[in-house]
Amino acid sequence: MFIEILKSKIHRVTVTEADLDYIGSITIDEELLEASGIIENQKVEIYNITNGERFATYAIRGERGTGVIGINGAAAHKAGVGDLIIIAAYAQMTPEEAASWHPTVIFPKNNHV
Image (tube, rainbow, N blue to C red):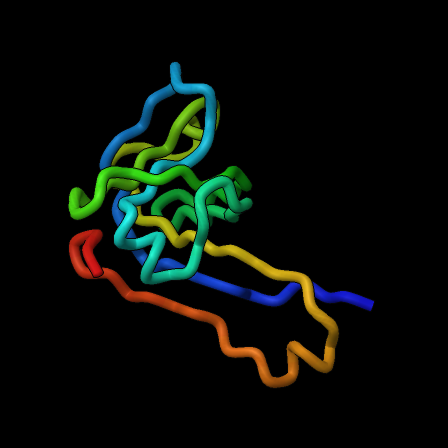
């Protein structure tokens, strides 16, 4: 049996752009991706602290060092520029693996590591 466990979390970053016309996803500064262990195209859950919305999408690499957090496509209706969000990624593992697992959680300042 497998269970879903928190793998990575980027805690409290600010949305810097929202683009309804993009095909979808969330753009995340490459430094934040690396620090959190989230990889490009990985499924992520977005928790909007500002308005309570929750949605799933996938991560795409943003320009390194820019602090970009871009909500793309239809999800731009759920999070706008200036909103504070949490980005979480999960992994499947056995309960035995989960017993000793420690997720990577980062606390960026001004969207930078």
